[in-house]
Length: 157
Image 1 (cartoon, helix red, strand yellow):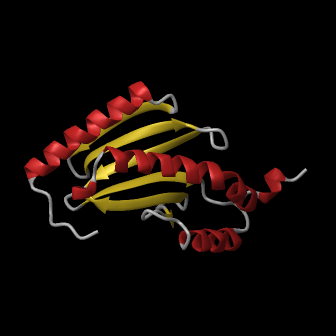
Image 2 (image 1 turned 180 degrees about the horizontal axis):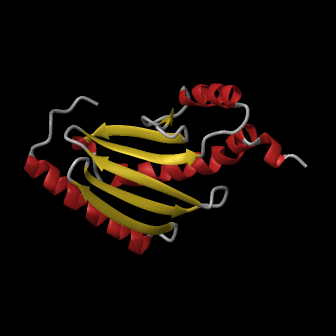
């Protein structure tokens, strides 16, 4: 993922490109419930794409445009109440098999996130489609099994 820093013009063009892509997704993709963006003076440009799921009712993918990368993340599940060590071991083992730069991580509030980053210069329609598709796929595939471990007593009976 080696790429030099983006110029201000590069970042403006890429921000417009991502905004247009997100609007097309909102209009054309029936799984997309909403899209929005924020321009935070401290954090820079951010977008979210909210997807309707089956195993997890809603998956929101955040994109954060930085000077060298496009970072992406989704809150996968809340902080586990039970079997934390077992769940963390399971997630670490899954990290080794996740393609495309995805990884599970523990967020500042101890929730579990799926996240990754790509060089800003790699961003195109196909890559953005791949990111939201992967976020949806991994969440739909692993949300329930992970919740069963992290909230075992709530799934019994």
